[in-house]
Image (cartoon, rainbow, N blue to C red; front, side, top):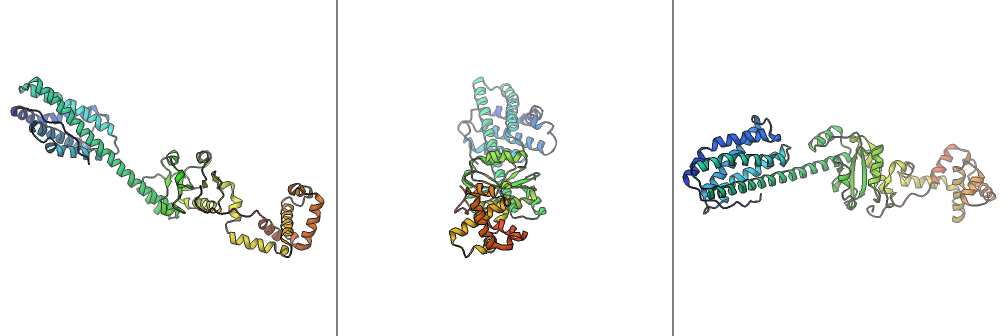
Length: 402
């Protein structure tokens, strides 16, 4: 904790100090009552843990000030009030842990200082303190309160930062467990520890780690980011976006515009691994070309190339009748057969698709029928040919999508 500078003391006669000390308990009670009555955040807090906290803070603050005042201008001002500063710092941390903002605490300092000064100044004047010394005492009071406020603000801020780091690490562990497909009981326990309320659905998104920028903040507080060791490679980030279905999905795709991202399907939160698996498959196929890929629009490609080796074997098996042909001829016949199957044998449509004369189509298909024979009448063989003649799979990315 940083130390806060304190103002130099003032020369106050010992009998005035004694008078102030004698009235300190009563002043403390009135300060506590004023804080509880005048600060909404502490309303009704005279009983219970919060009331005890306020009373202790007030006692520490008033006691520290009195020691500072008694030290006089020649004393070391940091020594007598260090306990009060430490207490103010701890108070700020406690308020952060309790979920209260600094607004209420700062208001309490203002109300408490005003009430304490009203009582203490009256007592000091009654004890014979002159106007000049009273003015210097006022400066000391409010500078002292500023120091305590700063200490509390530092404690509050540092506690929030520490809590944020802990929560972030817990959410990363939750994201890793979701991607790994852990059982729902484990996921529920991790979600509770991470203070993460499970949404109706989640959507996995893969994108370059250096392109997320402010994206996470725009995706909402429920968005989870996976740790590096749970991603395909360090340069790739994996996000789990809550409720990105329907209009939410369109909004997500707009936010991702200009990024080579891979968006998995929307799944229940405990089935996030399924969304991640599909987005990862799209990433491995390299479907993105500088813009986000919605995997819901590439289902056929994902199914067809789920097993590249199997597709290669199917192609070799189904197109075996073309093996004896020169490469250029085999390519032309395969192209014609594919178009013929897709257009259900409509010669004019095939000719338009291939930019050739219908008679050329007729001639080529004559060759195809000679090579394939009755296979073209077998539904299973036709199915295999349609799959085998699909366009070649995309080339996987050499590195992270960019």
